[in-house]
Amino acid sequence: MHERHAAGLALALLLAGCGRGPEFVEGPAVEPNPNPRAPLAAVLGFETNVPVSTEVAITDGVNAWTLEYGTGEDPADGLALVGMRPGRTHRIEVSVRDGAGREGSAGPFEFETPPLPEVGTEFPPVETRVSEPALMEPGVTLFNPRRRRVGVSQEIADYNASFGMLMALDAVGDVVWYYRTDSRISDFEKLDNGNLAFLTADNRLLEIDWLGNTVRSWYAARRPQGPAEGVPVDAQTFHHEIDELPNGNIVVLGTQWKEIDGYYTSETDPDAPRERQKVMGDVIHEFERDTGRIVWEWRAFDHMDPFRIGYETISPYWIRRGFPDTVDWSHANNLLYDASDDSLIVNFRYQAAAVKIDRATREIIWIFGEPSGWGALSDKVLQADGDVRWPYHQHSPSPTPQGTLLLFDNGNYQARPFDPPLPIEETWSRAVEYAIDEDRRTVREVWQSEAFGPDRVIAVAMGDADWLPETGNVLVAYGALVDPDSLGKIDWPPSSRLQFNQWTRLREYRRTDPPEVVYEVVLETGKPDLGWTLFGAERIDRLGR
Image (cartoon, rainbow, N blue to C red; front, side):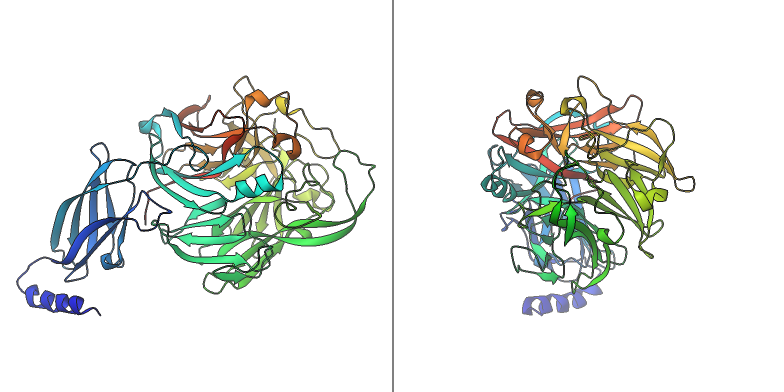
């Protein structure tokens, strides 16, 4: 124990009978965050003569909010002050309370945040086009901007993957927090302990606090990049998606390499020669946080037919990520645990299907998606009830409190090999909600964010759709949107579409008919060679723990 802390405790015992409140032994002081990865945060530090809980009131003259910290968060170690807008002077007041309910206070203090970086290759343009806070879900919107130079070379792919960012926006679209790292971020989660976890393009999983400090990290032990800092997990890759289980373990998408004889070499010509191919299939790993020990796995190769392929199976996705001569069979891009029945819902983009898995038995409960070619699994496939537009290359299926399933339907191709795809300009992307009857094994379409029309958008990759519990609104992240000026010039294969610019947007819809947009933020550069996209977005209750 520090000598001054011991003296403070002795003083507390002396004063306890006098009914005096907690006293500040050192500080308070507000300092800039020493971690440059999260520059809008600040650190509040002080010591008191007794353990206290802390409440911090902050205002910038327009916005006012409070941050609360329990007795388990020691202010001597520094408390994260978050939610501040850039380039403003903030007024800060500190209140403390001891276990007997006695109070003390200090302040006000002033703290000026730095401005945002200049918009360009290091920071995205963020434009708010619609904001109706009275109709919106409370909280802040957390998402991950992705920098994207146009082109198909490995050099450009590496450049794009070397930038990672998380960003939080308030209800009017102001930046209230951001974090910068050196590897592109896919999925991220706010954990039960209040910290953030995210996956990187180089097969790592990091847990950080709101000052951007790494609390712990894990990595796929057999990743192409070799060992890294943190706990190794016996996996080939970490990709796309994570989730936190009620038991505290983490589930993450990984992969399995398998050489298969007589495999396809073309998605468009069924008579093309077959050959022995390295095929990448998906694996779900559940591992313990402290040890990294895998305690449960599910392998797509054990349950699904690798000869049921989709468009982009014969693509360089895994080649660009360090796995030479490898085709991409199933391409899972989303994983969600459903506590209501101890199941996992996994989305397979190239299969145009979401699959529900019983965690106890590892058996497939149902398959929702394009119904052709399932062979021995045909009895698991949900059948259309009414007019259903099957999703293609979709993302982010998740059950809602209404018992429905919400997802982001990219709508790409609108076909599977070897049927010809629709031209790209005849498709569109949307958030869509389906009612699933597990007993009857049927699916019915009940709501969509937008229909085909002159204002349609086409997301060729990524995307997210989330039910917002207080309002019943739907938050939609549009992934990678095609520049409208490219239509007529662009085709589906990545070698074509990567040569044109992309943009993205976030929207919050009221779930009405027709849907009403109550929030829209756009990331668009207007430049032909640089764009910004995103993987997903979440509405979280607050910044901090």
